[in-house]
Image 1 (cartoon, rainbow, N blue to C red):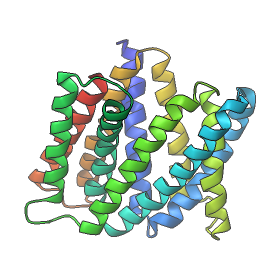
Image 2 (tube, helix red, strand yellow; image 1 turned 180 degrees about the horizontal axis):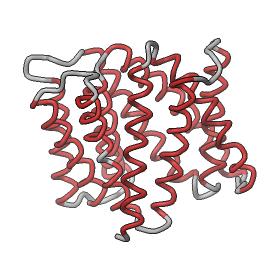
Image 3 (cartoon, rainbow, N blue to C red; image 1 turned 135 degrees about the horizontal axis):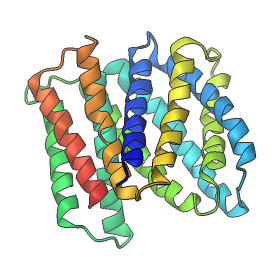
Length: 265
């Protein structure tokens, strides 16, 4: 894997972790995310026009993905409002690739490699540890995070097909229009402060990932992007946002390693 691709993928992981930290640390995570969505669409719009390629066959996938993205942001921000980022974020990021793999194996005829099987086991261990033997994490936050992971798995499978009929940038812009409009119709504030920065982070993480994918195969890029789990937990601990015990760190490391193994498998 070229060094430039490694750096870009690592930056994508870092930026993804940071925009989640910004939303989770806001006084009202729903407000911050609702402000971030219009900002992200506005930033994407000029590039979507320049790189426009959307076939009619992409429309059903865009509609389905937009619905799943809307559910994703509702569940993610509700999870952050009820639970700690160091529990919610690893669960969302770790459960999604595991669910995608399971659906692919059970319903799409994909094979399960030994490495991917080990990855599923590692994610399972991490999820169990995050919940805690003494139920340290909020039950509602954990439940919302796992539901959110299911929406990520859903739009991942949908987008895999949809991107065969559209360019990635206009596709993403069209998908995000629906949740952005929903946020505005709900009376949320226009982008500013953390919401604006988070919106830029959403777009930036996606752009960095695309740049990395132009230089290297998808599997190693996806594996490196999963380090966002560990980055988010470590940064939250370093800035004193949350008290992160040894169990939570081990759990985050297990989820990161497991998700990376699934990507490489």
